[in-house]
Amino acid sequence: MNIQQLRNALILSKRLHFTKTAEEACIVQPALSRQISTLEEELGIQLFKRHKRKVELTPAGEYFTIEMENLLLQFDLIHQKALQMAKGQIEIRIGFTHSIKQSILPEVLNKIRKSKPGICFVLKEVNNEGQFKGLQTKQLDLGFSTNPIIPPNLFGKKLTSCDFVILLPKNHPITEENYNTFSVFAGEEFIFPPLEDGSNHLEIMKSICLDAGFTPKITHTTSSAGTAFKLVENGMGVCLEPENSIQGLNLPLNIIPLRQVSQKAELTIIWNEDFAHDFPELLNELSDPSHYEFFNAQKNNT
Image 1 (tube, rainbow, N blue to C red):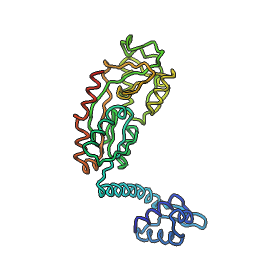
Image 2: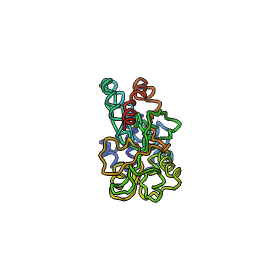
Image 3: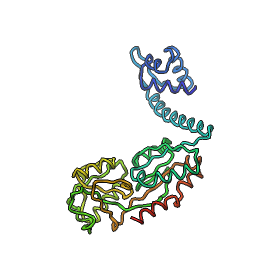
Image 4: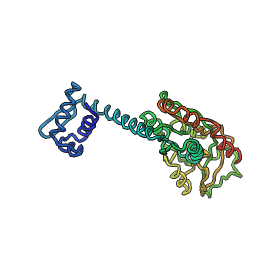
C-alpha cells in the first residue's frame, strides 16, 4: 500500500469510472485496476463493486474513502510544513474577523515579522465558526476572533476589548450629539450577522437591544461588514459593529459610540494543540498583552 494507491482510490470514489480515473491519474486502466485490487487485498476489504457499466462504493468503501481523504489532507499539510521547516521557513495560516483586520492584526503581525523575518503569514478573513473548523482540521494555525465560545478541543486567550457602535444613515435624526439612550432605536430595522458567524457574538448584540427594553427587528443579515455598511448608507437599516471594525475607515454614516453599554466586543486569539506544541515561543509572543497596548491607547484617546 502506498500514498499514490490511496489517492487513486479517492479519485475512483468520486468518478466511479475506471477509464476516467485512469486518465485523471495519468496511468493506464489495467494498472489502475491492479492498484485497486491490490489495495483491497491488503486491507481485506472490498471497497468497490464492479459492474459491466458502472462502479459503486461498498458501505465500507464509502467510509474508508471519506476518512482517508481527511487523513491525506493532514498528510499533505504535514509534508508542506516539514518542507518549509527544512528550508528554514515558517508559514503561519491565520483566520481573522473583519474587526480584527481593521484594528490589531496588521500592527501585531508587523511587529512579529520584524523580530522573526523568516515567518510568512497566510491570511484568511473568516467568521468564528469557520475559524473553529479550520483550526480543528489543521487548515488554520491561529484564529483571531470576536466574542467566540471556544470549543473544548481548542484554546484561547482574550487580548483586548472595545465598545460597540451603532451605524446610521447620514440623514438619520439621531446623532451622537442628541443621543442619550439605546431605547430610541426600538423602532429601527437592524442588519445583523447570520447565526453561523458566531452564536455568542450575535447573542451579545441582541442583548444590547433587550437590555434597552426591545427585541431587535432583524430585516437583513450579512457576513460582510462592507455590505452592512452599504445597506446602512442606503437607508435599509441600522447596524451594530465593534468600534474597531470601523477603525481607519472614512464611512459616510452617522456613528454613535455606545460607551454606556455594558456589552463589549472581546478580541480573542485561538489556537490548537499542535500550534502550541510546534511554536510555543511564537504563541507566547502573539498572546502577550503588551503587543495590544497600542490598541488600548488608541481607544482611550478617542
